[in-house]
Image 1 (cartoon, rainbow, N blue to C red):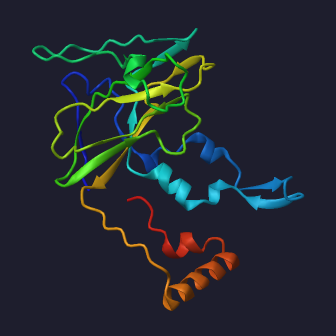
Image 2: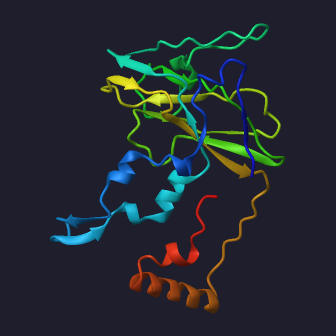
Image 3: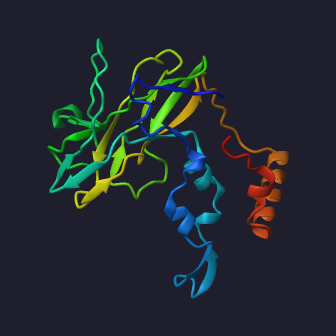
Length: 235
């Protein structure tokens, strides 16, 4: 699948580019041990989430959308020093971040204090998807280390391919101080085929029960069975 990202003239040399998520796994995943001692289980050595293919494949899915510029966070205020060009004849923001007023999320059960502004990360990349595909924009999956939480949105980027999709987010770590560097992933873009879903819910027959038993016994004997036998992983 080809996803095409386009920026305005003059921005190509200053913008961090979107990257395949599988090439930008978080540092904490690389640093965490493969096994650890479990005090809960009386000192038994257990495998960590570093051995969990579904978690890793979620981290690796789709494309990571980057923060355009360094953001300095100090005393509850966000600031930046970024010289983005104005393109003549166009109306477009040059700010890497904007705001939604608190009233715009009134009544929505979000984990934010009453009266909190919703930040909006500005995206300077128009995204074109193949015909029949939409893009699901979500908070970078399994990235609870980030001091914000991006709200999810689904956009038909095969048709809306010449405009910018921006990313509203809640600032979830009021104690964060320092610089959020340019290139920090602020959203994960996951292609979704646009088609009706047919749901069938039924009881397992004898054949499916036998297959389930084989998988259950196989996983008990070989914890890596799924990874070696069934896993495809992100493309």
